Length: 211
Image 1 (tube, rainbow, N blue to C red):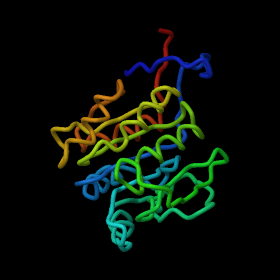
Image 2: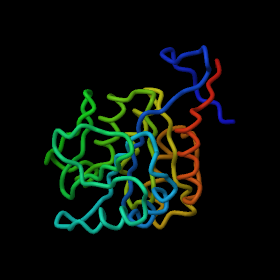
Image 3: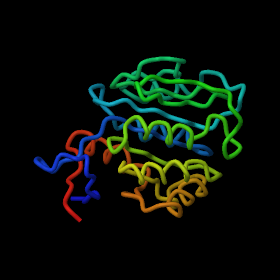
Image 4: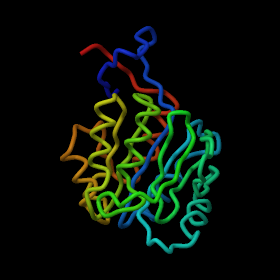
C-alpha cells in the first residue's frame, strides 16, 4: 500500500487519510482522456470532481454532453456561486477561470490568462487546495503546455495527493512531464489505471505513517 507523508492535522488514531474532492487538469488530447477516467466512477462516487479542459473560447456544450454519455455521475458546466455537491462533475466554462472558494462554492472569472490559458489548471488547483487542504486529490492528464505544474506544487505543500498520467500514454506529453518535473508526485499511472486508482483512494483512503 502506498504511504503518504504524515500531516500534523491528520488523525493518527485510525491511520487513514480521507479525501473530499478531486481536481483534474487536461489540455491537448484531454477530451478522450477525461472520458476514460470518468467512466470508472459509479453513480455513488461520494466526492465532487472539478475539471479544467483547455477549450477554444467559443466552444459549445459538446464536452459536457460527451462526458455525460460516458459517465454515471452528473456532469455539468460550473456556475457562479454554485455550491459544490458530491457525485457531480463540474467543468470550467470556455474562457473562464474556475475557482473554489473556502466556503465550498464556485466562482468564475475572466482574469488574464495563466500559462496562456483561460480556464487555467493552476488557478483551479491552487484555489481548491486552499479550500480542501490535505483532503484534495489533484490529477494532471495529457496536454501540450506546463499548466498545472504550479498547482501541483501547492497541493504537495499543503499535503494533498497527486496523480499524473504516464507521459508515455499521453497524446501530448508536455503537461504531465511538467508536473512530474515540478514536484514529487504520488502516482504516475497509465491512463486506464487512473480512474480505478481514484476509486480506491476515495473508498479506502490512504494509509499514513510517521516519517
